[in-house]
Image (tube, rainbow, N blue to C red):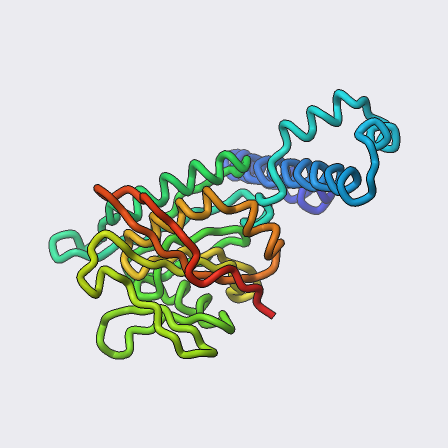
Length: 274
């Protein structure tokens, strides 16, 4: 903790604001501690795998016991945690306007996707804060955020996807959204729009937004987002091995039975943005 941050909390005259600021700062530094544990675990693994060191030798170099090294490797989160940032992490889903519910409702598929995503992020030792994007689409993502939201529901998501050099969302003026490869002009349609109601596609990307980054999951239909989350839960270590912490994007196709994903695959593999 920097002295400036501590001094700001110490100098806050209002007791409730002081308590709130202290709680937020404690959460931030707890999450930084988790990230440092992740980095240490990854470094220990690299020392063993890339430099041929035994765990006993690594322990001696770090001034730790071999048992402590084993404990670190068992309890710290995997390196793939870094795909989503450091945390705390905001998980945002959109409220959808309805004629009889002007304040908006949450689509069942979005709610299920958010629940599954929360479980994945919790396993990675993130503190997760739920956020509902208003029907206007206006919101200000914090530094570490995941949005299960397409460009139709928020200009924030649309602006983030616009930074992608390889993929884009478009409705072609028809209202039927598709994902398009910018280089080849190949169009990836949702099978739901061609009569196959048990399959959908989704965009997944870690993107630049203003001065930060935003992780976006955007099904062409909301069911596709649920499939994309299932793909991430199964394949996140492989994705991290390929892209690290760089910006990237990909497209996931999912098949469903009774609303649950039965098969997920990357039809446009992860591609690092350069």
